[in-house]
Length: 218
Image (cartoon, rainbow, N blue to C red; front, side):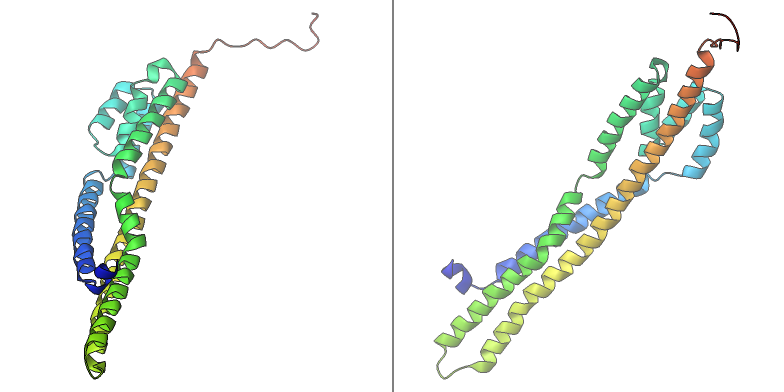
């Protein structure tokens, strides 16, 4: 550890640079994914509601198949099980929602971890740089104040780089996490529309219940 500290914190800067490149790659990939799977809710509901009200399952399935958004795919899973009843459709949609959540959250843990720990990595590099600066001061004859000040200033660069890496990672993590939450909430809302339509179908198919007349003998 002493040899590592005396060697300075230059390697920490390279580590932060590598982590920043990976984080940029993750950010771009997630941004392209969310853009490709964006959901136009208003026009989709405008076509979906008449199909559900008329119990036109083929039309609703065709609409979902033409929409690549995760919300539509969750609803499609429920529509494909609609003939088996409300409970089966609900369970299948919940399973599909879990799959969508796992797929869209891939890479977000890296951004969250990097945003939380990059400042500490930078601080670690700064501490190593300061130790290296004081080692140079001890070896230099006659003091050398300006030299150690230059070394400390150079060591503080690691903290600045750590913050520079952490801030975008935290911002984009919160943004993508919010997009994921909205996607899951919209898929749950669409699923409730389907479950309500299935409930009305079951009620209309049920035989009427004859209520006893008031005052009738038993």
